[in-house]
Image 1 (tube, rainbow, N blue to C red):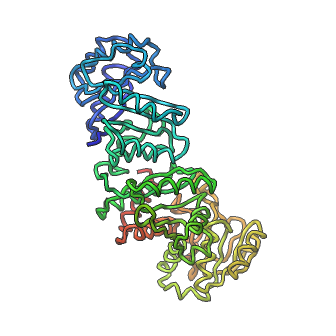
Image 2 (tube, rainbow, N blue to C red):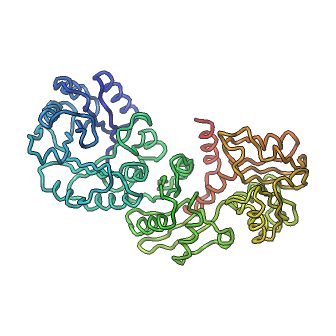
Amino acid sequence: MTALCVSIFVDSIAQAKRDIARAAEAGADMVELRIDRLHEPHLVRQLAEECILPAIVTCRASWEGGESQLSDEKRLMLLSAACHGKVRYIDVELETARRGGDLPVGRPVICSFHDFEGRPARLNNVILEMNQRSVAVNKVAWTARSIRDCVEAFELLTTRSRPTIVLCMDEAGVATRILAKKFGALLTFTSLDSDSTTAPGQVSIEQMKRLYRWDSIGANTKVYGVVASPVRHSMSPAIHNAAFDAVGHDGVYLPLLVEGSYESFKAFMESFISFPPLHLSGLSITIPHKENALRYLKEKGGEIEPLADSIGAVNTIVIDGEGSPKLSGYNSDYAAILDSITEALGITRQQLAGRSAAVLGAGGTGRTAVAALSHYGAKVTIYNRTLERAEELAREFGAAALPMDKLRDADHELILNTTSIGMSPRSDASPIDEFAPKLGPGRLVFDAVYNPPLTRLLQQAQERGATTVSGVEMFVRQAARQFELWTHKLAPVNVMREVVVNRLAGK
């Protein structure tokens, strides 16, 4: 069973004991005690004897990413002093072992190797050398060059000949930390919180246990994720993992950092799909990869939803089977926009025909809104500060295009803001501050901005008696559609909405 190990820098015995107690309360199986800053063997022994959790003790040399400036001899002496109490392993660098020092004999040794520049040039030779040494555990960690390095880390775990820890550091390597249990690693390292990480890309124990559902991950767990750049602050992992939990689906949803080029997207897809033990089953696609996803699916002969093809963007990929899986692409944004509007009005999609709609903005979301409304027969006018861009979009979908200042006193039944105006932290702005259209009862205002949930635009519309739809509705509905495409189960929409609202409220 893969252990969840909280890594703790030791500044004092009292501080370390407090942090160990916090780790135990949070559900850690083990702690790693980083004694880089300690110099007294008797303090190390005291800490080992008073530790209440199984522990690894590490005194990492500065030349391998740690803080200890001590000689090999003095560091090994400190580590030997730690062979007491609940200490289960002693961590010694491969380079230290090469130099011929006397390794501690009181506890099993983890032989570790770190590369903070990138993938080691002779990685397989490093593993071979570790296997030939009289140590208990191999540990290899390197800074991911790209997310594709994660697959090599998983392969090393599946071909291990002894207990092994393999991690890719930095944001692109987060998947190796979360999926360590799926591939049978001895353990994965976490931090007590986001402010106490001991390595790049480390995830807090609370996130591991609650957000990524660590206790539910197994060898057959299906993997999903959001492909984006940047991806760090995406709410999608929280939404989908909570939904998986609510319906008992054996899946885990990850942030997947893929740099913006088509070549990077294609390389990611090729490497992740071609590794069957990963059980990659579905992807959310967002900025800047929606067009890249469509292009890739066309190259691979994947099945593409017709409206997604006409929009020119895919935000959902379904992956069925292994080896040479079937790939299908969808755009759940358009359905989310339509359903948010029609439910608020109490009408069907077909009843949008003939209704006058203003779409503010001609970017990706604007394009989706124009395509969706035009498809169901609405009379669409696109308002954009750059008229040429609006005209180009209008020609594709049989819509009209006008400069933004023409919005003043315009009369539309539906007004959709697809720009980012009003988004936090500039939440005091509204796209109609300068050019207010006619608003009031019988009109609907939709804002794609979901942070904050009640934007200034929506406040203005409510004050004048218009029906309003928050971007939260669109965000939740597009995620719900993705969930149902992947799992073939009814999405727990209320659970997903609660996650979004709580996250936006800072809970």
